[in-house]
Length: 373
Ligand code: TXA
Ligand code: MG
Image 1: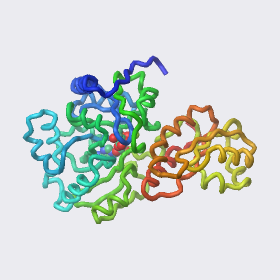
Image 2 (image 1 turned 30 degrees about the vertical axis):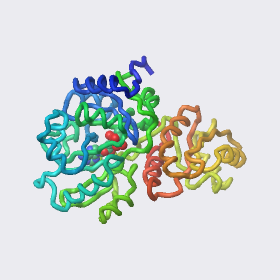
Image 3 (image 1 turned 90 degrees about the horizontal axis):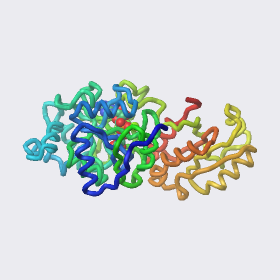
């Protein structure tokens, strides 16, 4: 990597003010959220938006999430008349415009916001003209979320709504600590606010709310679909077929380590010697293997793998006890560790369930797979 220029700052009141000034003049700042770190810029500043795309090398067809702050549904209307300029700008996002959303859709938006904000749920809603086309890649909808992390909340209150994708280079693993951001973008940005390791560890669930009130999942994430269905009493439609046209970020390969990675069909202990041999026949068959063990004792998994395959391996575990929340929290950091371990190939055990957080974990593991770059 070329020379690091980023400063990693503790979220003291002075540093938050400094970050807010940076944002207000159209610069970008890396900000902690409860899901992953974001690369934030003012949602209404075209220059800042351009910097986000450039810094990440992100194609402009992939729209950004706008991070907002408000204390309860309904106060959005009063935000329009608020004295504080950043809150007045929030009013421009105008969620409750009956011309854009049917009564049913407004009702669902209210339930979802009350139940899941602040938190890892991004809602896609019809957009109003004040939202720059750069944010939405020209789509007629806008993605909104209120993060739960106090540092993100304070910054939004000080600097107004923030557009923020995950603070990684396009297609790479999302950062879940300030150190990860430094390694990803430290040569390209000035400020990284350190808010500690991310609590959730996978990105927000992206849910489309159509004007008629249909709920469609665009990306599984930190808010389980079953929770959304329980509070709304509505079915969440799951994506069918390629999603690239609908949610441009949902490209098949995403979140990838540099090292080639394969998702195993079963946990290592259940894979026979013969099956392992077939799996390992594919190149590169030489060199050390990096094992991403889902649960249990990683040393035991490495030992079993070495006995069955006769190959050297190095193992990391997502959650010894098999907790999905812990596995999600550790997922990206452990993928990074294996990626920089010098392994020739990463073999990942599958998540034992696709329920709850298992949906997002399985999705990220599947997308991280690739044979070569
Ligand atoms: O947890 C998160 O959501 C993190 C933190 C920083 O908030 N952000 C994040 O942003 O993951 P990003 O840009 O990496 O992913 C946003 C996803 C992309 O897949 C994008 O295509 C989709 O949301 N998206 C954004 N606006 C959309 C829109 N109007 N219609 C459809 N999909 C949209
Ligand atoms: Mg991302």
